[in-house]
Figure (cartoon, rainbow, N blue to C red):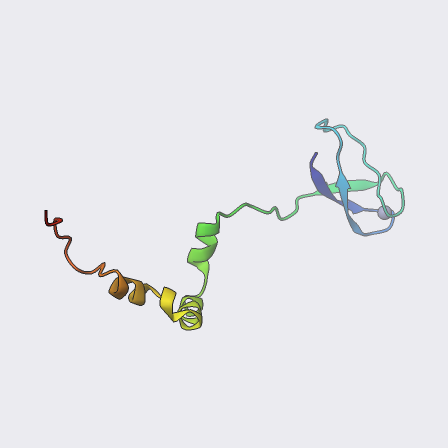
Length: 93
Ligand SMILES: [Zn+2]
């Protein structure tokens, strides 16, 4: 069930109304004053972001802070520890 924002002419407030049907003729009432003189307004809507895109938007300084807090897990240290920058050699048999 969607929640819409309405501007109430009765109490001159912006209220959130849970609309129980998809029927556009639904006649919501102001939950604050009970007035039926409410007009739906277009509200800012939230959109879902993946955790990856949130991480990408983080300031790079947080990467450095995380690296500083746990130096063993820093990217540079892992590359060094597991020799990720070395060319891959075939196993000796
Ligand atoms: Zn009202």
